Image (cartoon, rainbow, N blue to C red):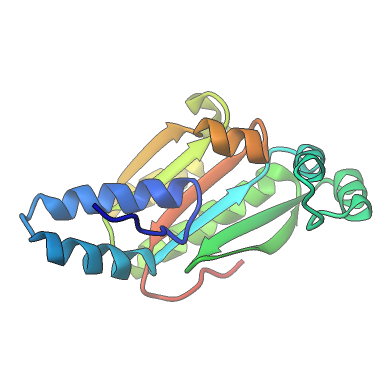
Length: 187
């Protein structure tokens, strides 16, 4: 047995697992599975939006992480700025800062809809939230996202965010992952 660095976070790991399970149904040899997963993981883009920038700042401070400075956290909270974080090919960074948490989630959903229309390399998309699953339906673009996925015969796997993710980025946090060979999604 070998460990593979997913190069991803949260729902990205779930997407890699779902795709691997699907691929194993075709009875590949042990030697075929690893390169298959290694290739697929490079197509996975996972996005996360913290439910509260204040929570994210405090959590980072507790861990000794200086990436979210005090001033940036204070300004982000005051202006209601929500970062969109992306994990892609073993790099995690903020790719956009959007006014309002709901707007940030809707921006990710809009980008996912565009990617779906261009074509994905997996028929799975993973979505999670550090809340009740019904909370997903409060985002104005979520029903359009589900319709786009259904029209493309994709399976949306939804789950409550795992405890590690919820603790690290906070209650209410949202994550979505998909796989595409079209390059980085734009915001």
